[in-house]
Length: 289
Image (cartoon, rainbow, N blue to C red):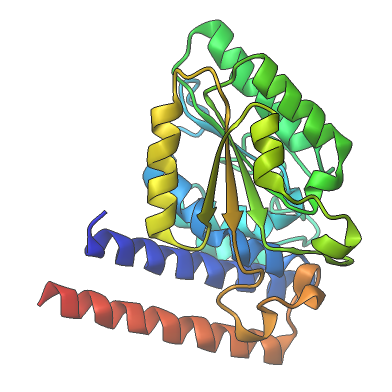
């Protein structure tokens, strides 16, 4: 990627983070921490990697994305809105009675959502089914799914991993948001799943470890993913991230796993994100000469 392309992705990810704060503040609830940590990879997927068309969200030949950690719906909604699937102005209706933007993704109401999720462990299983179906039909479709590292405590995840390897789903990319925190505290203390790289290797995956908050790292990871197509091995991206990234008081703070900001907290978060966005705009101006 050029410097300009990276800056544009950073700006888009910052707008996605603003959307996450708008949504969770509007709801007075939700899951901002794990949404903010996932903003960069979702931005990369929807603005650079996936074969999708917001004007034709039901295209049978499109790539698929499944948010297995469905509680991070604010991140998915903010990304879809930025990509043009529905108005950004609708984000503050999150979790409101009658809103189509409920606390977990609903494929029947939200344009661009490929699978309804929420019960941890189930999303990755449906992604495996999508990938197998595409192979059986001879379709050139890639399937991406995002899990949380706390979600890996669900046994169904490991059954899905065995399935993906057994059926040689090299059109499947499992991405794990390794931010180290879950609702009850550090994952290392609640239920340590490390070493994840060795475990995914043992399950037959093409395993790639990267910084999930770096677009340079993500680009290299997806280049390696593209090279794995035809290998007969599914790919797993283990993405080191910072929970709550972009909002100082939310970063690495387990308290922000599952609550929305109040008015004062909202103003502070939006001020920080606006400042970050303005700095990126200045960088774009300087690079344009």
